Image (cartoon, rainbow, N blue to C red):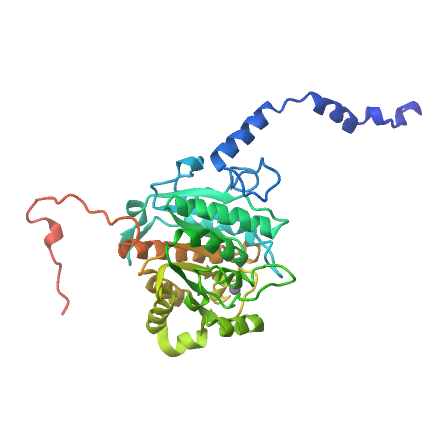
Length: 390
Ligand SMILES: [Mn+2]
């Protein structure tokens, strides 16, 4: 405890020692892992300066929740092709204007999706038998730059379409709707219709000077083969919508169906009308599902809750009805786990996905309905029709 012991010299600091040791530390293994991630995760969009960032994130930050429904993780993206469905996470909340948190949406939906077997007794469909599904992990988004993130998302989604695998996109805030459609449109030989569930029309050109989560459909419907006449929005209403969005909808002749319209005309008629609008002269239809279309009593885990939304039973029925004509892809956006209660919002998001997939299978639009080899055995208990109830 002498006077000289209390002298503090820069050379004696742990920090200084670490600086010197760092020079001698090899980076061999890290470099190998980076190269492997680039090989498996593919090259990023041209706008990304750091070329060590792969297009599909292969592990760094995130990716710890297991895969969606426990399906295999496709680590090497060069092997994509021939599968029916690819689950793609887009952990972005840079587009939120107020309450952030949707970057945790993909991992929350993946985690709670394991509550379920893949079989649904009311649809009578077994996704495990009917679909070859892989989880391809997350897009490497650039949180500080939404336009670079759009470039990454567009490129990743385009890669899935190029390989003809049905994309299920786990958002993410709704800004990703624009690059999701930008990645799809070049692969459709004709017009793309959009069926959009939301309390908000998301048709503003910008928010806070940028393209944010209130603007995906303004920019998506600027894509030449995604015209606004084929955009149908279902569930709009409440006090968080933007006036500009309705002006744009009027000017561009998009179709806005409020929740009061749904009450007035009923689920069945609304679904038929939505299909008619989206499919008019179109070759493909994309489904964009904002979880805030559901009442916040059932979906509190979202950034812009708006009371008076759909009941889960209503929205699941509507979703099944609009999916039966086939889809070119889907997204579930705005699940924000920091605001969630007992995972119910994330769970509902997974159920929207599973109901759509089950419907596509039953409609013969995706995968297959497997049948057993016929078993020629007379008088099996299965032939017994059971007691008749008078
Ligand atoms: Mn919304």
